Image (cartoon, rainbow, N blue to C red; front, side, top):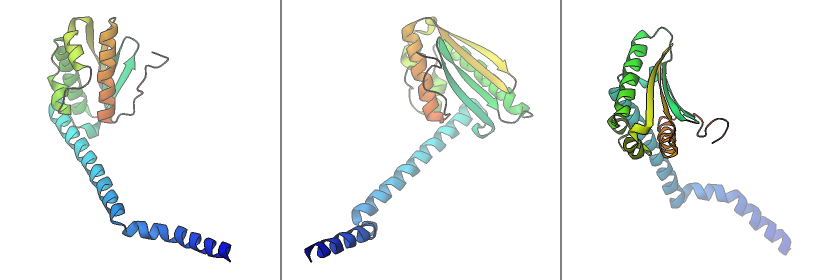
Length: 181
């Protein structure tokens, strides 16, 4: 008898728990907070994309960004999604050539304007500007900036900067150097 009563109470509790949780004020607060966080995250990404479009001079929806870590530094690469999008290709090339010039001079105002903050690695990259080389290269659908250094501190700063770009722009690029270090 006691066992049957126990099983009945347990079964009712298991079946009722999801229904009670939906009406529970704590559940409702949790759901609202989750929705607000998702909305805030979407708003933050939308604001980043908007600032990026303004500063870079081309639409993020028409292009693909990649931030690649290399053993000697890394790569910032942007390409037009459509092969016939000559306007985006030209704007990409203009922007990336300016990035190479500005970064070489220790000027990182562009990424700060886009991200609305100083990215990790930037203070060290500015301080170690003479130890880092920035080389712009045309690509078929855009261009890239090749960042190289022999200085371990500068390389760590470049990697921190590129990892922040990967996260903020949601590129999905690897967060580790291919093949090691």
